[in-house]
Image (tube, rainbow, N blue to C red; front, side, top):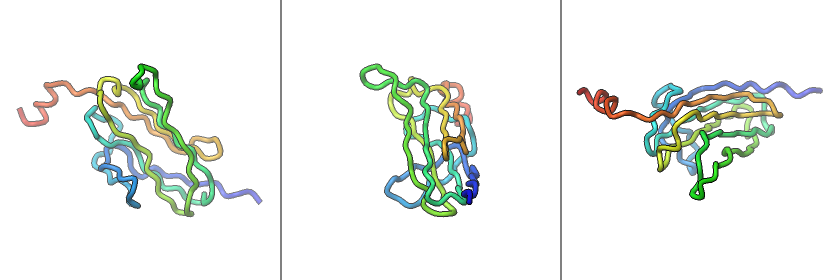
Length: 140
């Protein structure tokens, strides 16, 4: 008998609270958006709920906008695999901005696959703030 098709729902996307890898709790949504200002330590990404997929393997991937390492080489996308732990499982896929900010500007595409098929994806536009916007947000 064929295995039931997984049901994947994007629950949140945008700017989240800081993710703690040691905690069982996922980051909380602060702002629903796909436009993210390039600020040090800003946490962005999305959470999904996956049903009917216990034991399945998911593959996640974060495609960075040609970020270079200390040697000047373009870094590979960040990816990995996990097993779905329960029949009603929540998962967070996200990243943060680190120094230098200048090479983090651009589109960050995040995907989750099950059995080689993309089941959830979001693209975030990380943009540089200009000085006028900085002061405008402070009421000047």
